[in-house]
Length: 74
Image 1 (cartoon, rainbow, N blue to C red):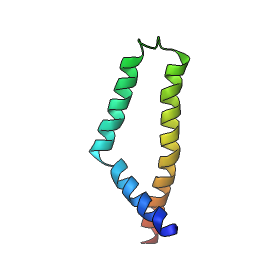
Image 2 (image 1 turned 90 degrees about the vertical axis):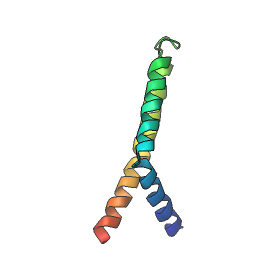
Image 3 (image 1 turned 90 degrees about the horizontal axis):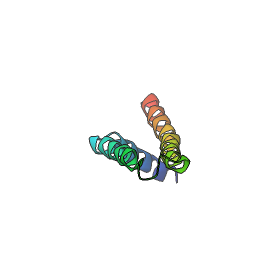
Image 4 (image 1 turned 180 degrees about the horizontal axis):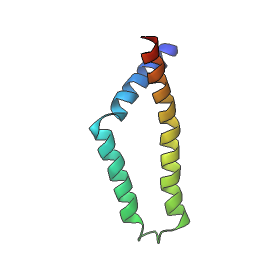
């Protein structure tokens, strides 16, 4: 199980650090901004981006910590 997490964390960190991940994140934010008038800038519209970014941030904290732990051991 530990080895599975290590491999998943390494691959996820590598993917999250790519230019494609940045482009995807920028596209999501752009789509959210463009959809604002359609949803009349409602509370739900704002909640979507807030929830999404909170979840991504929460998961990225563990990936960053795992990467730092591995680098410290070397």
